[in-house]
Length: 96
Image 1 (tube, rainbow, N blue to C red):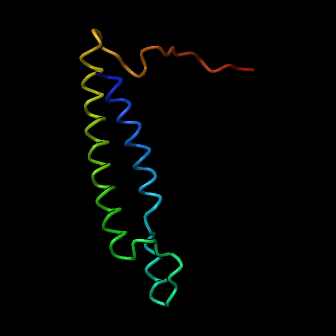
Image 2: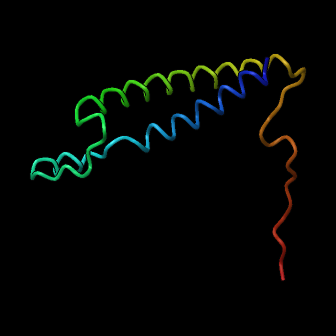
């Protein structure tokens, strides 16, 4: 189960990166005001932003859901408390 959710999580994260990079920046509207249409996509100025915005919202929601699911599954799988600093040792800085 963990491997399935982790695979979905990785695929959604890659999709989220691609969708975010395809979106127009806020400065692209200024170029369109002066007649520059080079920054527009094949979908047109309005429909592309709504499709990409919806895809981003869905991908972000699925990403958050899989993140929470992986956290819960990993906590249930482990029998002992784990800490980020569990394997670290403290040492004094070396002096010359």
